[in-house]
Amino acid sequence: MHVGVLTGGGDCPGLNAVIRAVTLSLIHEAGARVTGIEQGFLGLVERRARPLDVPAVMDIVNLGGTILGTHNRANPFAYFDAGGADVSAAVMDYVRELGLDALVVIGGDGTMTIAHKLGALGLPIVGVPKTIDNDLMASDRSFGFDSAVAVVAEAIMRLETTAQSHRRVMLVETMGRYAGWIALEAGLAGGADVILIPEVPYDVATVVARCRAHQRSAGSTLICVAEGAAPVGGQMTVERRIAGSPDPLRLGGVVQTLRAELEQHLDSEVRATVLGHVQRGGPPTAFDRVLATRLGCHAAELVRARQFGVMVALQGDAMASVPLAAVAGACRTVPPDHELIRAARALGVVLGDQ
Ligand code: F6P
Image (cartoon, rainbow, N blue to C red):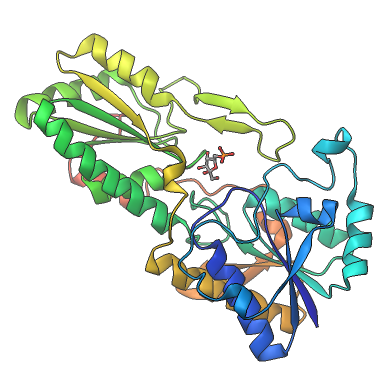
């Protein structure tokens, strides 16, 4: 059996742990030959692949990024370097030339959408979900999320000491796209006083009132803001548009607007920090290494059982699989009555709406 592996979309802590798990379990359990496709679907278009054997995946379980490289615009159905042309037939030719019996595709919803379309052309595919945003529909938790939350929670603690020293209001902006999972969990873990997420539109007057009261009682205020947070009746802050990407909008910068607004109404100084890609870089936590390993081994099991057109998932505490069609293009946001939201409110954390 000859199996290809690729990582698509943005990088994420734990990708290498999946590559290692898929490779080792296919070699050990099925005597398979494994080939790594370089830079996601770009490698299939540009015909770049290399063998993955036991030495190639040694010592990478704790390594951030992806040893195969990745790309977030290489869509074979609308290829950016060919004026948006459909080059999927050439991709299928290359897969046949390589002699692949199956392809394991590790990526987010954009990658799964492409995987689903290639599956419809006859490519036997098993997907593995990745995203720090934790927003993939069928999986209760995605690897990379725990690592990102750990980085943000530590950043909040570091900002807290400088906030206290200067009696300042500190805003910290997290990633997460259209979902507030990172800001909500990291805000709770870091002890933020205010948490703003896309699912709960905020009222600036409410945030100002909280800051005034907290500055009086505690001397400093920590506000954790998801990049997709928006005021009541307002829009998310778009930082840039990436032509050719399956998900072209990049959010970012909401804390700069908030900083200016808060400064108008507060006597305290206000500072804003955008954490950006530090949330995605570096080693995965032990939790993410284990989750990535479980997902990779389960994907290898499905390949061996020739169950294709599916994505592996964590449901409850068990490995599961769902049709690729069910996850393509879907986004799992925070339900407004989620237990973590109720917990935050019970602690007196302000979510900006009341
Ligand atoms: O989906 C992961 C993510 O890190 C989002 O949280 C963020 O909005 C986006 O990717 C950033 O993308 P890029 O790496 O293209 O700037």
